[in-house]
Image (cartoon, rainbow, N blue to C red):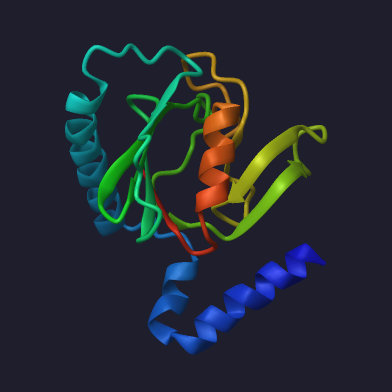
Length: 182
């Protein structure tokens, strides 16, 4: 029933705003890949002074204590750095270590909307594996979710986040929020 409600909500947004309808699917075009690479570079630069003196070990994260509660939310994922950067209203509010797709199961790069959210999901592809705080990014099973962070790419293509970070992020995002991956 929740899946139907999510689909109905997404369709309502698409019908109400035709320009937004195109944004409800992944964009892996060359232009999107360039935009994503630029966003990752900027996020890295924004995070440097915030993280100065902090060593984020695998499973570690930083979250701004005074983060704004309103405004557009965006997640920027760096596959090279194995980090996720969260922005609210253009302000960096969180940085986390991640584990992306291992070789042969690479996490796709591009710009993705959050298509579905589920507090506890189990993979249909991989032995019913738990995916807490799942936020689906495409129709093939790529998602943000809580999971093991070994300090290297190790997933089947998803972006694994530390559990506490995944829970905070899950509580802030909405269907349609943008996730940029490069």
